[in-house]
Amino acid sequence: MKKIFAFGDSNTYGFDPRMGGTGRYPRDIRWTGVIDQMPEYEVNNQGYNGLSIPGSDSAVASIGRSIKEWGPDIIFIMIGSNDLLNMSPASCEDVGIRLRQFLFALCDCVAEYVQNMVIVAPPKMSLGAWTDPDIVRESQKFGAVYGPIASEKGLKFLNACEWDLPLCYDGVHLTEEAHLRFAEKILAEGI
Image (cartoon, rainbow, N blue to C red; front, side):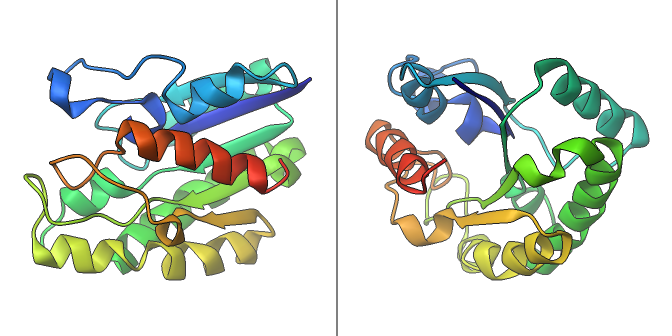
């Protein structure tokens, strides 16, 4: 059995915006839950609503402790959407600077797990209740910005921007169909 540590924001958590602030898709719908139900995988879902890229030493150390305690064979990291949503002006390049600092600090903290890390560029956003044209345009750059950062550190990379995933009315969160498709894409990568 492969142990998976999935770290990210609300699209890892499985947030369902139709249900309000605490809404969550059922386990058999969220991409992490779909994979966890397979007998060959065990998933530790460390997704949090509203999470931005951690910037403090204590946050990195806490994540590092969680990784070491879980002892994962695969570590998925998909984060940065909230950073983009909350900055003005929106800049995917600035999100990339934050991501690079975080990843390099985390790799130093859990050096024995670096070969297990997979950086996932978040899905591109669409026009919706939470987005505007600038945010949507910048979100389309996630893959182009994240790929070189992963390569620089020798990390595996997946580009969810290319997966054509349907989003909810807010233009940010994955629909039920998108979660299932996301899990299929992850599995198709031969994790």
